[in-house]
Length: 171
Ligand code: GDP
View 1: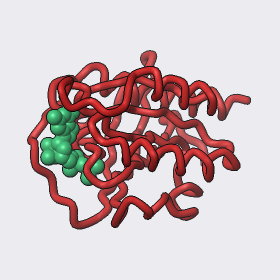
View 2: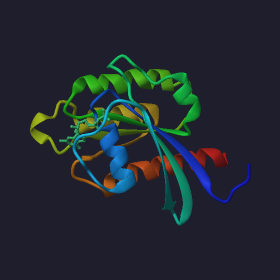
View 3: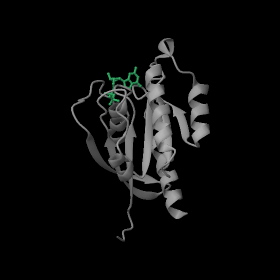
């Protein structure tokens, strides 16, 4: 297919409750609502300019049933890039991204690790360095954000991932 508009498919992955929907909605609408529907997987389309190039984002907000429900091969085959999310106030969700990392090590797909809820300073269970070291080991992008309070840093994570996808296509 030939088109001037690049399409980038991003799957948002992480344990239940880490803020996948909050982050997706922040990126797509700049808004934060606070409570989100958890019934099903949702797919959004959204056009943005990245380095003055128009990109059509498809964002798949996945919906794992529990802490053991790792991303399916269907999702991994569909996605051009993965946004892997954990919550800094829940160590179990960090274990989830570590487990996901092991299955992703075999796929050649750009990944960005995003630590969410860093506004909850007094409840922090996972340090910045732990996230940063995990990301470095797998050569993933990494940052800490708070979907509840930030717009630009959340968008920056999606943009970085998108750039990594475009770069991997040019190779
Ligand atoms: P999902 O299951 O991963 O899609 O998680 P949700 O997006 O539904 O978020 C789960 C809960 O965490 C909701 O009550 C959100 O309001 C809350 N939440 C999401 N992001 C943040 C954040 O950055 N800070 C705080 N304090 N709460 C957040």
